[in-house]
Amino acid sequence: MAQRRVSPPFLEVTNKRFVPLINKCKKSFYFLFHFFFRVIQTGHRLIKFRSSNYMYCNTLLANGKFK
Image 1 (spheres, rainbow, N blue to C red):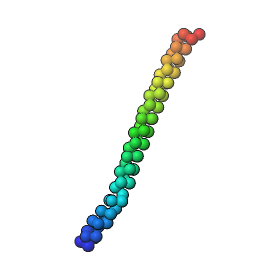
Image 2 (image 1 turned 180 degrees about the vertical axis):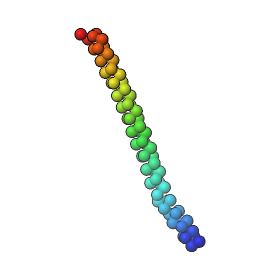
Image 3 (image 1 turned 180 degrees about the horizontal axis):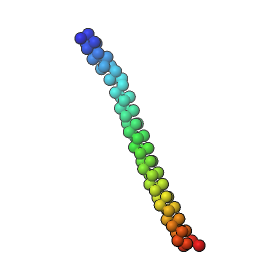
Image 4 (image 1 turned 90 degrees about the horizontal axis):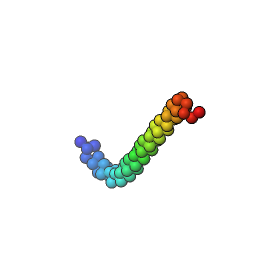
């Protein structure tokens, strides 16, 4: 019971101190996450595009259109 009586003000103080920090960290984390996700998506698309072009060129070479 004593711990319960002691903990609420302590929690209030920590919340007042840490909630803004946590919110900032959350915002930055979400921003970074979305940024990296977009970079990975675009990179994946570029790799797909390049590999498809590469395959297309290889098929053209195999068919002898570039001779």
